[in-house]
Image (spheres, rainbow, N blue to C red):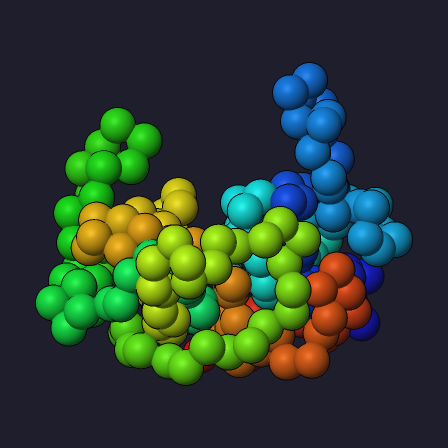
Length: 194
């Protein structure tokens, strides 16, 4: 029996993907430890930036974290973009694209991208602009990488900046009916590869 703990969390908008911080500038941000009483030593597996929402896995086991952040686990996002997404933009993202990330040119792996209907997710803490400012559309983006702000950079490079980004799935773990800000303990998530 393992002494490690693993969790699923629906990370709300405005929270950093960490439990504690020593950075002076980050003290004004909300942290995951405010949402749930995680055991000491818990770390997030990968990250979602403060403006992104949705599924975040956490663990006390570094090996589990390494396994899940590998390219063996798909990550699926529902993304609201500015404008009505075109076939050309979808094709660009699907084929892999050159992005400039942290002062380097990198090529993304091919992704799966498809149009979806508005998923009618929960209200976000900060309102998203409405259709008076122009139309928006929703896509599902599935990637195996997890580079810094990758999905946001992909949609922007394709000409459709991200307005809202919600991670719905990591491998076989789906957000399901987990409410925003809610967490629950789960079994070892790295045992269920996609």
